[in-house]
Amino acid sequence: MRVLVLCAVHDPRDARIAEREIAALLAAGHEVTQAGPFSAYGAVPRDGVRGIDIPRATGRRRLGALRESRRVLRREAASHDVVILHSAEAVAAATGLRHPSIVWDVHEDTAASLSLKPWLPNLLRRPVAGLARAGESLVERRRHLLLAETAYAHRFGSDHPVVPNSPVVPARVPASGRGRAIYVGSVTVARGGDDLIALSRRLTTVSVDVVGPATGDLVGRLRAAEGESFHWWGFRPNAEALAQVEGATVGLSLLHDEPNYRHSMPTKVLEYLARGVPFISTPLPLAVDVAEQSGAGVIVPFGDLDAAAVAVQELNDDDARRQAMAEAGRAWVRANADWANDGPAFVAILESWARG
Image (tube, rainbow, N blue to C red; front, side):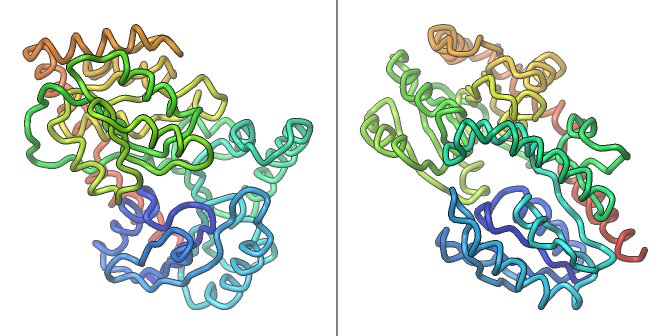
């Protein structure tokens, strides 16, 4: 197949887009063209991918990216067997485009995510959310859909295949060690950015590593917190970020109780387990399920940093418990959430739609 991947919102190196889906397509021998905001993020296409640079859609500055995305789709879609769209903006750019295999990869609950958009006035969030729901129903009738979460199925009238954000499980990883907690992912207030800083100040023998991009005022707070017990590494490609997880004491997921998170799997907890590190998480439903099923997670209340600090310290001090949790977590994620299985299944779905 020839596959066109388009998204003007996410970093082109996004783990789902580049490390999972594009990597799986290349491994299966397919050709990939990726249109994304490479220049805006200081990124380049991965080896074997033809890249097309487009403007980044950010905040209220989205019209230019939408127009250029539409131009790229009109020019490129016909020469590709499958077109994958990775954001609501990309779906809008494809309005009216006639192509038999246009796929919307649904990453998030579009309407619920509006509560996390600081650029959208509060007064407009409810009506815009209603428009988003209506738009989803319209798109469902005209495009193929892939869902990143089983929980997203209730938003749609028909069944659609689920392609989860499962990690690649390495054959071997170093043992979980003492003295280092880690967070991997985008760093925002709602994802616990300030909580990670505050947690580091409560720990005496464990430092906190934060690996991921941040924006706005939070950048200054992260930089100001830099010291012996707190390290902010900024953006790292997914492979580098996960390499930093290896050997850590515990992985952190202190996400807040936001509508967009309640039905989503925090991918980071699966990535921690795949790398042989137990996790500590707030009580989001799917994180609780993983903790209970795997025996490799500790759940702490939302906003309770004292409880989080105690959990980190206890895991740091109990080598036997920590190693048992790490081993149980790796076994569970290998059996239930391994991209080695989900990647080929994703490719097979696209191949069937391309044939159709």
